[in-house]
Length: 156
Image (cartoon, rainbow, N blue to C red; front, side, top):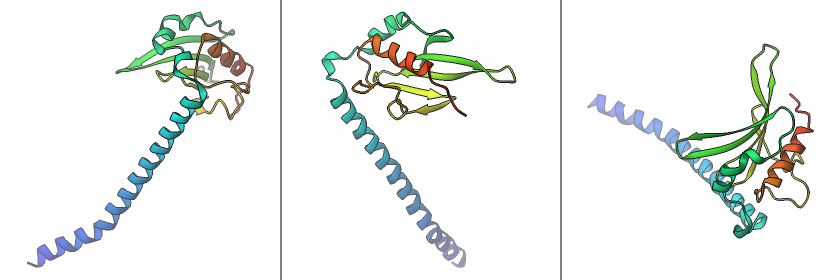
């Protein structure tokens, strides 16, 4: 009987931790909901559906974007997710190549960028010109952001 009492005491001690985990899960869920709402509002404001280029069309013509010297393009698929990537590669002092700058598009057609392996917001870093959208509507949108990003210096 004493042994079972100790067991229940240990269960009671763990309950607050379980509640904390639920709180963390709820916070994560709330953040994801906020992000989804933000993305939906971007989609509604940024681009009416009938004007946007389809991702399937981009996959057929992504190589037609004129790229600055040192840039390359590729498509990477994992499971059902496919990503079109435009990348500028550099060499570390050790001789190991790495992607210094990337512009990439997933099936939602929203422009995403990364610098030195970290995703950056193209609007915050003024990569998207005033009045332009982050949702790709044509190859010209991709060409413009790649050209703009190419002219930028990536800091450590």
